[in-house]
Image (tube, rainbow, N blue to C red; front, side, top):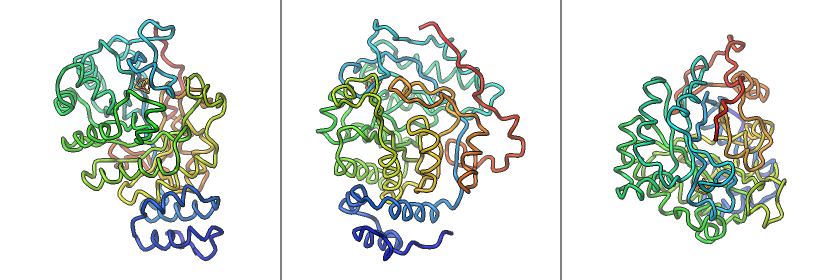
Length: 395
Ligand code: SF4
């Protein structure tokens, strides 16, 4: 257990009463959260967040061996989510829609690799029906019975319910029967109505996103949650967003982890309008978004850093700022690379272990429900997951 911080030493006096609350196990309120975002005393913020993480998770840092699959980048909201670089119109250059055989072919990367989870997200295709996804999940489970399916954001689930003219619950039940295990947390962006009107005016509202996750939790389907930061949102918007997630977690306990996602401005309209192309979030913001989350979420056990967005180097540093979960092997990340992420598209298994050990933490491979499955790594040389070249398809 780390020694408790001494608030009297904090340079920013506003952090002292917040530290007293954290150490007494009291919940932070919105004003506390905004003060945390506002402070320039980043080292005290980090020390406090790291202490709170150590109290919850000790010195263990989890990671996973996972593979991303993106069946289509065709999306009916392509022209209204102005922060998105991934989506295409059906006939636009670069648009693709995989056949099921192509998806299964790409998933073959998992054979012979330590992959334990497929992370499956894509666009809102106007013609891909529920049966396409159900057949995909069945096919993946048949071919890789031990691999967990974490698939489809709340936005994709709501889209399927709309085109099938059925309920969210019905879509979730059918997908669960086909093999869906958990859901990712994407599509949340920032819940504020004003922010959404600027960056994603036709996307699911914040309340609707929460409703989909509440329905999933009600059916026993665990999910993740996220926030996309670093665009037009204010500290108050961020705290409102985190408060809505915290309230749902109070009700259901269904969230597994929270992942702050850094906005990338390349190849999207918002980045051009803001004059931000080539200028991603700052390291300062990346640190704060992890540390504030760790302190604000007293009811979510794990905070994950997504290295494809903030770089492996920044992800390594946030492991000292309250973060306990390092995004996994990620064979192969495409969504943020379209938006200008300059990181690799995958991370070899042994490099994850090395990154964690280098900050004096204890690596632990986890399953998708955050159960430890491997804590000894003597045979690392045989675990170079994702070292091969990406599978290439005709678009
Ligand atoms: S953010 Fe999602 S819903 Fe919006 S355009 Fe991109 S893929 Fe479509």
